[in-house]
Length: 387
Ligand SMILES: NC(=O)c1ccc[n+]([C@@H]2O[C@H](COP(=O)([O-])OP(=O)(O)OC[C@H]3O[C@@H](n4cnc5c(N)ncnc54)[C@H](O)[C@@H]3O)[C@@H](O)[C@H]2O)c1
Image 1 (cartoon, rainbow, N blue to C red):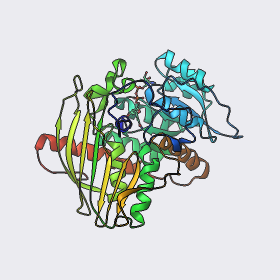
Image 2 (spheres, helix red, strand yellow):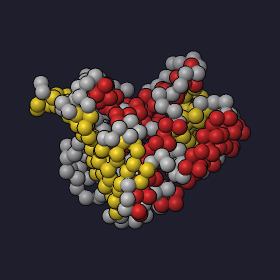
Image 3 (cartoon, helix red, strand yellow):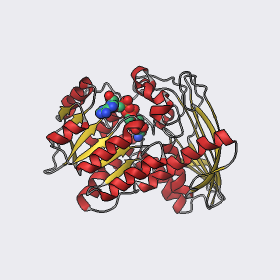
Image 4 (cartoon, rainbow, N blue to C red):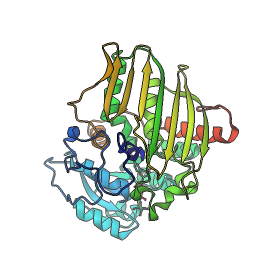
């Protein structure tokens, strides 16, 4: 998830801050002028916006913490969805989200389901609560979007998927990288043969601890029980997904993990190699650090005929553009746009009965890869992802 933060550092040495990046404006629906990875301010005063749609999807927010603020901005830009309930065990958070959205506040998922008034839930809870909340919502028969990771153990994932197969509604695991415009632009260029057959790829994501995700009361993310591990199971998914889209399934991984970030029980440094079923090997590195961070490109995809990098925009290097050419500069881009695409796809799948861009089962690939990385860090050997 938190991949995001990192990205705010591309091309700058800015330290972690709760302040929005310079140049930030409340322009989420038109993000083309913003840095590729700008993120919104949690303090933004934008309130409830009446949607023009006659029958928008009525959605309950479950967990009104940090990521819920970003999802709210996305929902406000998607006319097909309206937030009608705000649920959080912290009454102040439920009330604040209710006020901002026009929804009704509730102190528990059960209380919200008993009262009704929504057809779908977006579950945004600490990882150790994903299974119980997902099972409750699926059994209640509402459509469910569950923030990544589906769960932190495969048995729990399988129980959730079994319940989803019996449930009447749509079940989605929210992996917003699937809808990240820069990833889509790179995917299209790769599919069009812009860099030829892929030889290797690299993810390098060094990022700061944004206070709303790593500060004080968010200690659950630093606790290996509630988080289910460290960076790989959490932030890692947003970077594993694009690699899988470009390179296919990960076959095996080898990883070293360390704990340089004070107070974080799970790994705050992971250095790893992924071997894909195609035989291609990619490197995958994550670091959480309060120190200054040098400019970095997050993704580098290397083909026989050139390279594509993703940092501030998508840049193609090929025979005609040895100094690099930005791709699709006029297309709306930015990490925040991914949340709009994601919620719009959820609403479309519910309304049309057509499949999501990626099934919930597909998200097992990120969980399995992260779990294999953790195993490899212990065994110091290559670990299979799917066995
Ligand atoms: N897609 C992304 O980019 C992204 C980014 C951040 C977080 N996430 C994911 O979103 C989820 C939440 O992360 P967060 O950073 O927003 O956490 P958070 O701690 O900021 O928010 C969680 C909220 O859940 C509430 N809560 C706890 N138990 C509850 C319960 N039983 N019922 C109702 N509410 C309850 C807490 O009071 C809190 O407000 C996690 O799965 C995380 O991985 C995704």
